[in-house]
Amino acid sequence: MESTKLKVCITAVLAVSCASAVYAILRFKRRYRVSSEVLNYMDIQIVSDEAVCDEVVGEIRRRSLKLHAIGFDCEWVTDNGKRQAVALLQLSTLDGYCSLFRLNQMKIIPGTLKTLLEDKTIYKVGVAPTDDAKYLFEDYSVILNSSLDVRHLAQLSGHSAGGLASLSKSLLHIVLDKSWKVRCSDWEAEQLSERQVHYAAADAHVAIKIFGKLINDYKTKEHTFGWLFKNTNKENVIDLCNKYSDVTFKAKHNPQKVCEKWKKDKRTGNQLVNKRYSHATRSKPLYNNGILQAPDGELLCTCDSKKARWYVEKGLASVVDEGEGEAPLTVRLRFEPAGRSVGDVGRFYQIAKENKCVVCGNTDSYIRKNVVPREYRKYFPEVMKDHSSHDVVLLCARCHQRANALDLRPRLALAALCGAPLAARDHARPSEDAAHAKKIRSAARALLYKSQKHTLPAARRRELEETLLRHFPAHARLSRALLQEAAVAPDPTVNNNEESHGLKVVEYFLNHDGLLRLEEYWRDHFLESMEPKYMPALWSTKHNEERLRVRFEEGRLSENDLHLLGLTKWL
Image (cartoon, rainbow, N blue to C red; front, side, top):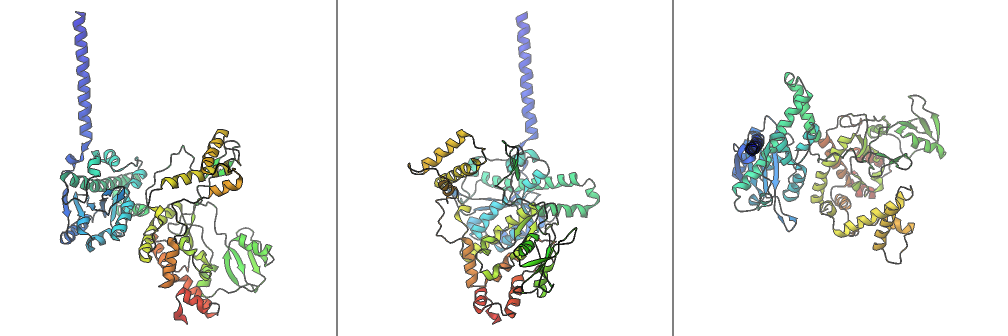
């Protein structure tokens, strides 16, 4: 009897277990569905010629009017570790109209498609779209505008910002096909397989669905009464998208790790500056607008108080007003300056500068931004390096990140125009020799700086010394001079005799349009890409040309300078 009861109990337990397992499986299936089942409504168009392309692009534009966004992705073939030209471009609207453009068969990107990709009013959403944008430019000279990484919005909404498959599963409950067999398949094949077609279309369509969901979540979370005030809501969404447009996504650091500007010395408890962050934001005012006067009391310019006091300390100026309270420090020169303030170009330097982001007006913290990048300006002749403060503006951290991301496009365009490729190390993986050189530099710097502060354990010190001794000859002695040399050793892959991108661009403009055009090119780019609302009064894209004209009229510009600057028309 007892044996029978035991058998019944075991049978019951097994039955319950099986039922629970079946229930769990069914529940999982109800919650997560594979893309081939749930996305079977997609209308997929395969485009291989220009005539069809124009028609499909027109349909995409019509269907994207409501959301002003389309899903975006690219596929290519990798042969022996080398990326081939983008073979397939995928675009999708929210309602499931998916277009697969066979770029390898069309050879060029048709004008209507190029215009759509460069249209700033339509966001191209996906995961890591800025990488695909770079490849499209390199392969087809197309500048993708308004790319938007959906991970920015996911992170803002409190979701884990994983890859496309992870976001699809967590937000849409759709499981994408991410098998390596289809991911790494031949995207240049004469005819794509059914599985390839669905995979490519699903990636673009899921991206726009995730975008739509996150935007709705944002509206609900941030604007409880958003639907009552639709115009305000729409403007906020546009501002949100513009903030992250064309910005490369970077995952937030682990808060448990030391990643702040400041960190504490474990031994003394004192705060140390983290040298990894050379462009740390400022919380103290950058401009304190001291006043510099000519000998007769005429206002020359506003300047940093430290600079004004330097003139006083050198006996070149005297203090007129110490600047107590809100009054600025005022200093009067004891010698006649080379030039006085003339016209708007002179008045620009007399105006007090505001300590806020010139794009959004943020006053909490800011970083200096060189509108004309230093990689070009450092090769300018001295006559153009004077008064370069005109092209230094303040940006908050977020605007600074976005501006730097957007600078890649004009750099790539200049690389193509001037035959000045960007450094190979910007795109290529580091070689083993380069990795070894980095290890040597790191070991030398640790021995130089951490040993000084007594923060390097003895065992770690011996390990680093052994690393260096294996690199240098057996008779070498790890002197301070040797460590300093090793700490700045260049990568073996870098050809120091090869001209830099910046130098080649400057030489090109010297021989063609003149360097003033290069300056204007970058200033126009900054105004168009960032649309700053708080630029200093009298800031001008032709500032240097106006300044140099004043110098020319005063006889302070030689004929050789005019030839160098491309201003022979003034002769």
